[in-house]
Image 1 (cartoon, helix red, strand yellow):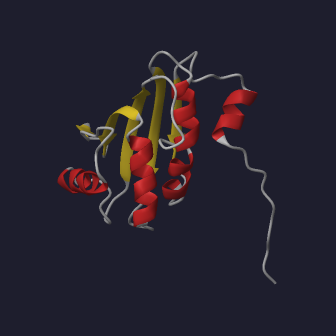
Image 2: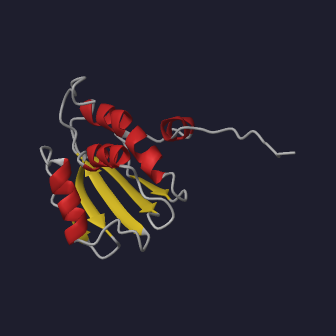
Length: 147
């Protein structure tokens, strides 16, 4: 027989709201290290972060430390497109704990992103890849096309 169990899960926005933590009112630091599920989780934050930024008139002091595990299971190309969308929301993206900053812009293409990762030796299949994402600009309304 196969053992099964139920686990209650909560979204990050739910947890922050439950503990009355607001990205718009105070610095927030989140560490994500969930053994190969980062490729799925991180893209799911895009709409939420974009919405928080759209209703703020100032930079959000939001920092995310995320560890990817490509040696266990690499992200799919579709997942990496989602990762790029989230990375582009942040002012600063550093990789591999060496302080190498990816020069991402709002209009950076996926091909440019892949080239940056290769050049910086980020997300190779041999080691964990740690990224620090910091600062989200509050920039007025976000359109549905941007979500």
